[in-house]
Image (tube, rainbow, N blue to C red; front, side, top):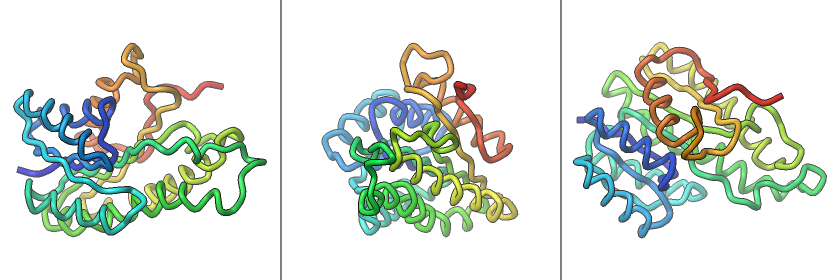
Amino acid sequence: MTTFALVGAGPGLGLATARRFGAAGHSVALISRSAERLDSLTAELASDGIQARGFTADVLDPASLTAALQDAAGTLGPIEILQHSPVPRADFMKPVLDTHADDLDAPLAFSVKGPLTCVNAVLPGMRALGRGTLLFVNGGSAVRPNTAVAGTSIAFAAESAYAHMLHDALAPENIHAAQLIVPGAIRPDAEHSSPDALAQRLYDIHTERTGFRHYAEPMPE
């Protein structure tokens, strides 16, 4: 049995994707800073018959991320699918004219160093399996910079570039890197951007393995 590892586990999209990949037969590794949240999520998944474990780590702490992913693989089985979708902090979203050099340290660590750390941790296992999927979930500012949220616009653009390079470099090894852009808010009543709809879309991206960038719905003009 292989493992679906979710970095940024939460009760919305995270729980929905964990359910979808768990229902397909994967063990589920949930990674979050909050041990209390992890306990709640793993209990919900267990009630659905899904094998899940929580591992505490902070996206801004590379050592804890690496340890959590290595522990997950050792406990649950090799990680075949990695989803990186933590929610950025509110202080990453200053207007561009109020943003200074130091304001970018945390957003870039969160959206570039965090994913890079995760990929480096899971890549040896994927290579040993001979397959793998790397899923990156970003908001619309990743492809259309927004002057109101400069930190995430800059950091998401850098994450997009890194993920796209992974897509090109790893394709010959049967490891598929892809990005899902969610232009607006994730809402339970949204046709294409509800947690369940997005979870299915991410599962389809994993199984169909076509192209790098995908959109949950068209970007507004």
